[in-house]
Amino acid sequence: MTTQTLLNSLFRYKSWADEGLLEGLAALAEKAPQAEYEAAVRVFNHACIVDLIFVANLQRLDHGCTATGSDTAPPLRTLAEAVRETDRWYVAYTARLSAQELAESIDFDFTDGAAGRMSREEMLGHVVTHAGYHRGEVGRIMWRLMGSSPPDTFTGFLHQDEPARRMRA
Image 1: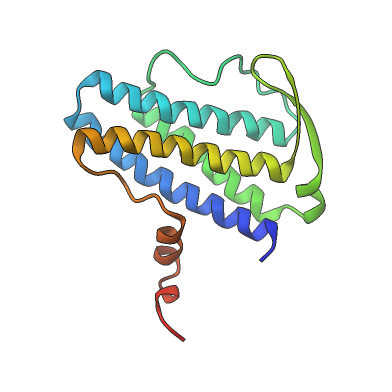
Image 2: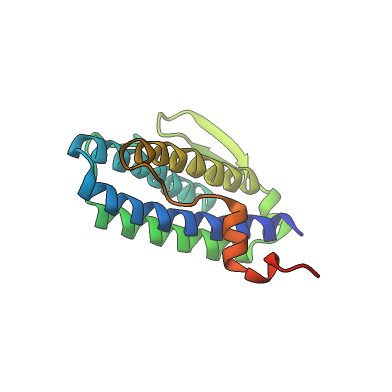
């Protein structure tokens, strides 16, 4: 397996897990106190904003953000559209990158104006791990309020995506 193949698989997993979390947030909206629901949405919105910032960084574009979060929770429908569009972008992007492009270092600015430099593969690794951290944070809120949270494991995704992996040779 190449780095490019692994990253593409991880971004397909991220898309699958994000979809589950969006469904979980819809259920949470019906059952949880408004303040708790909005806190969960703000956490997931933060992850989405960071995803968008790194979309710009990977393309050497100005992200235009001065913060990685917001004081108010966006409507779930708006957040869902942004998450799905960004996930589609990352899956398509990682499907076509070469080893040379992955290794290339890119200069960028953080939201506070500080300079940064990372390779594309480091940026992509950051996006995947950062998103997983915050999905877990939202999952803990859901678990506390509803007694469950959406599935969010790479192995679960792989076995659902390719059921033949469950069969012995």
